[in-house]
Amino acid sequence: MAVPARAYLSIGEVLNRLRGDFSDITISKIRFLESEGLIEPQRTPSGYRKFTTSDLERLRYVLLAQRDQYLPLKVIKENLDAMDRGLQPAAIGGVAHPAISLATVDGAMAPSAFAQTSEMRLSRDELLKNSGISDEQLVELEGYGLIAPRGRHYDGDALAIAKAVTEMASFGIEARHLRSFKSAADREIGLIEQVITPLTRQKSSEAKARAEEVQKEIASLSIRLHAALVRGGLHRLRS
Image (cartoon, rainbow, N blue to C red; front, side, top):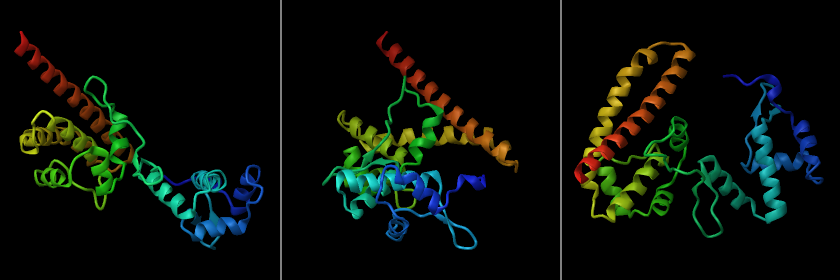
């Protein structure tokens, strides 16, 4: 959806909004931060900068990090990159980690959480350090199709899988034992695809949005059903 014209700010308007908190801010400083890749405002056809409120908040973060934490621009840029990928910036000498919780309630994940975890982007090293699995385990999981990178990064789903595998390994359960989980998940995905295909074939944006919501809701329900079936089966074993 196109952003309304007045959602953009000129560089002069950005300067005026920042001056109350940063008295030494100048247009030259803003241009310098842009040249360093810390902000990337859009441009009008005639070349004027167009700043969004996100650009403004990004500038505030940079200026605060410089003034209050004395962070060099290189570190600030690394922190911004981490936040762009859905991570909490690393402490000095540490590694960036997820800024959100991947916990579920009663074995189920809320529909809104599906997009949230998928938008996270982790490097291979970040995935290993945040999940506790070894590189050899990750290679094995990738070989069985349980984890796959999205382009150059891994998403929050990969992290959730890796964490679960780490915890299950303490019970002697290995990656090769988990292939049935992947097969079951693929069958559930196929069922969801059947339901939403009529919507995805429609060209309207409303149909596309509806398909996304239906997909999330059915996925959440399938997780609840799976948890209930496992729980019921275990109850029968104990009875």
